[in-house]
Amino acid sequence: MKKKLLIIKKFGGTSLSNIEKIKKAAKLIKKEVLLGNKVVVVVSALGKTTDKLQSLINKISFNSSAEEIDTILSSGEQASSGLMALALKNINVKARSFLGWQVPILTNTSYGKAKILDIDSKILKKEINKGITPVIAGFQGVSNEFRISTIGRGGSDTTAVAIASKLFADRCDIHTDVEGVYTADPRWVRKAKKIDKLTYDEMLEMASVGAQVLEPRSVSLAKNNNIILWVKSSFKNVQGTKIDDSTKLEKRNVSGIVFSKNDSKITLLGIPDKPGVAAKIFGSLANEDINVDMIVQNISSDGKYSDLTFTVPQTDLFKAKKCINRIKDDIKVKNILPDSNVAKISIVGIGMRSNAGIAEDMFKALGKQKINIDLISTSEIKISVLISRRNLKKAINVLHKTYNLG
Ligand code: ADP
Ligand code: ASP
Ligand code: MG
Image (cartoon, rainbow, N blue to C red; front, side):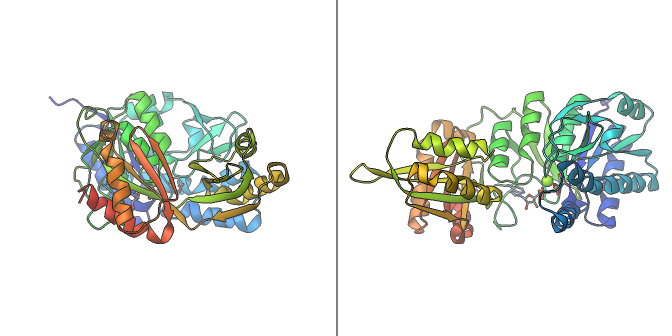
């Protein structure tokens, strides 16, 4: 007899944008239940609900209290968990909705970007043993102040993996509007191909440099707890992308091309070249909790001045400019040039560890297209470059071709 499995199935907002889609997802869940497997469902809010709630918040105040914002933002998942439970019951699958506090999913008090501290599995296990499919509202939890918290945008992937880990699930399926992880965003590259398998590290790099399909924290959590992750379609019963470490030893060069338009560049011109200046600049940015990603410094030919260029998240650009302005006289910078018309494009693959030619191919291919590279950063299995945003589409497609990914 085939072993019965415990499977976590997460459905994202893009694939729950209307009632027909919710019904389709419910049928997919029923299929698994009919095979005799136990299923725990995690849902995010319908379609663009969370964005709409955020824009309502913005109309009142940008500095509202984080606790109240979380109360508002989490409401999208309350509706979707109820609707999914209803859709399941309608097709004779025993189901029950759960909000974060009802599980409970305990978080710290960093509202808006809370960390999951613990999940109580008692009630969930009881329901599962009774043959009931829990439908858990993703993205939310409860703090020890007994307030609702949210865990950061895109966070229901993390909810799903955290539940999988707590329940020792056999696998965690992340269902979305595409059939898996592709060699590049299929919305941007027509010839992008679905990837069958990725290692945790490859997926982590892809997610952290912009492949929206999985939230980066969910991948690290899966890696740390050895949870087998699948990215799959919400609508079709086709094989998706498996993420685990079973392909660690395979020789692949570049697995995917990823881009992000979430960064801005700041150039500081004419800073006297003295020790301690960089520490002052990056120290004051760090004090404001601003993450600096790519950095380059050019020294003038007489060695007296330097120009410093770095990137910050676009959402922090205003804060970063204010911060630099505050220390402007101290560091004696001549000119500050912010630029948001940039994009970061990255190539990711485990083969990069041992193949130095890969970077050269990237720079040559971009050079041939007269695409200027502003900044470069690398990790063991990733190379990122910052380019002008108008060249983004051309660059992705050129690199996709360069590494024969189509
Ligand atoms: P969900 O609502 O299911 O969480 P997301 O919008 O967060 O969905 O993620 C799915 C989207 O990620 C896809 O529609 C696709 O456009 C985008 N995406 C970006 N890069 C990739 C990639 N390399 N492979 C697959 N999808 C990608
Ligand atoms: N609904 C939340 C968001 O839009 C969480 C998620 O989709 O994972 O960010
Ligand atoms: Mg998502």
